[in-house]
Image (cartoon, rainbow, N blue to C red; front, side):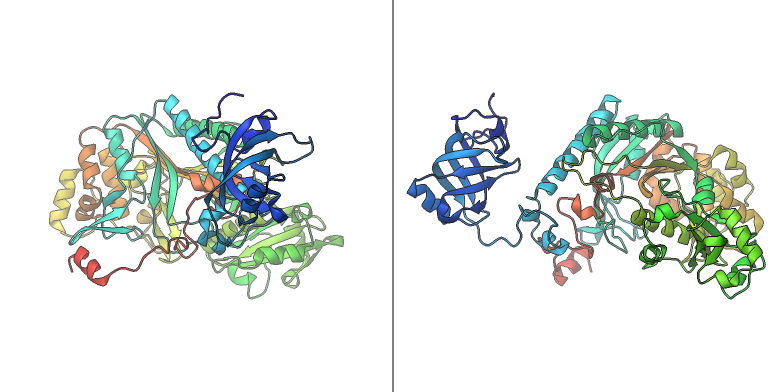
Length: 630
């Protein structure tokens, strides 16, 4: 065996490398003490790579040193590789010299313990010990491997890796940005995304850009899938259409899943329009692994009585009751026990979720069964094709928006509960299962806001509209799109918005026509969760001005928020598009864990604090006043 790449002046080999060292070879190793046998006769040593058994034999000076050590002490051992039986799990070292490099006090958690790890708050408080655990070390290695493979793949395809500023301009619209005081009365905002800069890079002629970017966002709700600081693969390409983006990411994911986790996927990945996803699944983030498609049950249940069904069935615009068949084979247990677990804590957004079980004789059992007569039951059974002992799920509300939101949440929780969990990586069980990956595209510009009680823009204003929908922009009563005409309109009505961004249910027909405007926005959905979001951008300034008008931005707002980018666009902008892919989320899904804390080296807890360091720190009021110029 050649010289170890890990050789230093303190060690000749890592502990894992000892397996390939010939018996009798002189070695020097370093590591943490795990356990000591009574009297210091032998002890177990571990490092990042493996473990070994160190034997002190009958040498009293060595046994005395070993007996006085606690787990966690760092020790250097000089000795020789000893012979070991083939069935012994650890390589053996005959020690000739011991050196204590560092002593340890009682450890608050044992990083070598088998089984379930301690509670998350304990692990985060002592993250330096938690990261010693084998599972965490392996995840850190795969995180690095993932980033290296991304860099290799994109660099081979002509991408330039370019860092963009973390300190960005702050504006009063940046309500979720972290504020960084720069000088009295002047502020930066920590980057929520590199959007402005990556589009400027397209105007700058870089053609293909990427970076593994740190992003920061003050979330209103933190939890297992939300962190205030996170990492994304950010990328942008010039002279492209939507299909070019899909092909690039299909190939990239196929590459990294194969190289990092040994998982193979088929490409091209399936694609589905937003409209089809809503129609089939009631959600724009479906998990096709869960065979559960909701259908309109209004006609099947017509005439049904009761305070729950009647208002929904008689709502303006048709019935808002949707039904789906949940096969008994999918449940994996008694329907009542499984569904109670699923429905507990489900955010129904105001809609009602009920279920009926198909009993022998095609009878329906459940709280709503008495509200249905036999013809209604037969129509519902025919519609869903349910058979004994299947379950029929019903989502009920007069508002189709609340029904759609409830279906989306219900599908996600059912998928988490009913589908097999991913096996964590560790070598014993082989590669994890291949994920479900699906492109959703053709998103509308406006989405329903329950808080506002109407429709608001849900895409950023540089997203390109579909060419076939441009006539809807022209016919929606928006102001003129040329800069000269906008100047005239601004002088005629200074300070007035160019158009209202809010579209209520009672908006005039020409205004509601904007709800039909679709965009070249897309998301990549992995196991029912967003993995990537992006779009093809506007490069025609006349269209861009129409979109600004649609969003209700006045000229002052446009200049304040987008002035540098629009100025650059006047010097020639290529067609371009891109997106951001969540690396932390990809790691979490592929590692088979349910919390981003498991894959981020030093995460914040679910309250936004870092228990290890105590961040965020208390601020000196006088310092704050000075920095803010108060």
